[in-house]
Image 1 (cartoon, rainbow, N blue to C red):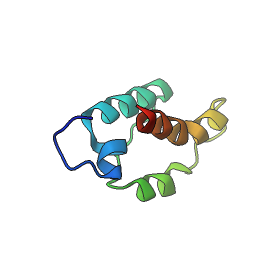
Image 2: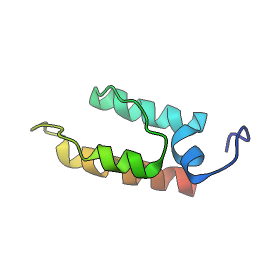
Image 3: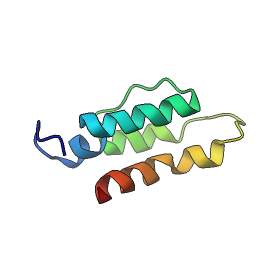
Image 4: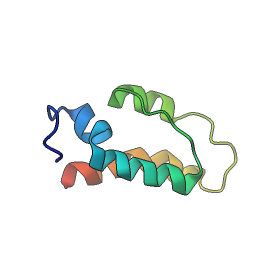
Amino acid sequence: MCKKGGETVDHLLLQCPFAWDLWSMVFDLFGVYWVMPRSIVEMLACWQGNFGKHRNFSIWRVVPHCLMWSIWRE
């Protein structure tokens, strides 16, 4: 999408500037400060952390799947 780096899956879904803008928007909406891992596998492994009893917990759990699917389809 950005034509700046090798279009690996990790770059496309996490590190591409366009993808990063989307991730940043989601984190801002949830009020979460996040350091993006280097790979999809690492991100999914740490995503399931404790989001507490926040009313949006069920939405938080599906965010990476929905966002990655949207980026992939684009």
